[in-house]
Length: 282
Image 1 (cartoon, helix red, strand yellow):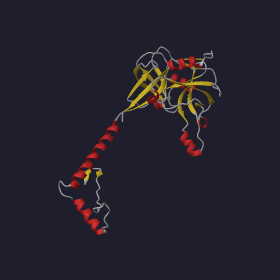
Image 2 (cartoon, rainbow, N blue to C red):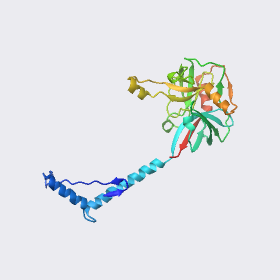
Image 3 (cartoon, rainbow, N blue to C red):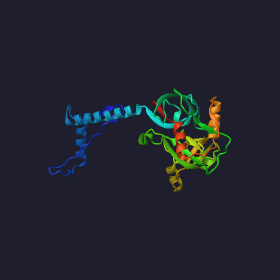
Image 4 (tube, rainbow, N blue to C red):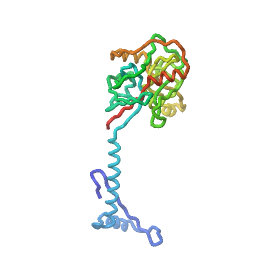
């Protein structure tokens, strides 16, 4: 029996004796019973069973279609580049959103709009519909060095850990990224989904980079047999500044020289970091 254009119900028959044991029937006999079952009588058991199976299939199909059509929301982070609402984040965080919501460390929500993107360097600029009390200081004039301490701020696994800014500490592992990419660098601070687009700060509270990705540990283990740990990447701060310059954004840059305690660094990082929620329609 055909349910609709792409679903069918297949039926068969098995015969048992009074004790519940299968009857030894000939192939011809089984074929005869199968033919009877296929034909069935109007309103009989076979038809009712088949209609019930079709009904279940229809419900499952409708549920799957409704789920597929539901808008999908992803979460990343962003850096407040200017007090008047310009925020820099990753292109993969903000591109293609039908609606963008940003949430600051005080849990204040507002909408934002996509302004520009740089797919090559995974950078994007969005504009929030509000002003901010503080903005980031982008490091200028100081060369990135392997071994220097860094702090990462973001919203990792927000659906589990919540919408409070999360901080993690680590080091610059290498001044070049994957396969020697000069536009990125490697850090040891652990990152997860929700960190993308967040700031990487030096020990003075200056933005030295923007979190962009981490090494796919499972893929590397499958290929090499070794499970890598805490290998993450950031776009260098110089690339972010060039991107902002190209969009005529007047941001602060320089180099704070005072070495700060970790608690102070965490406070600075949390104040200039926002959660970026991107809703994408199917």
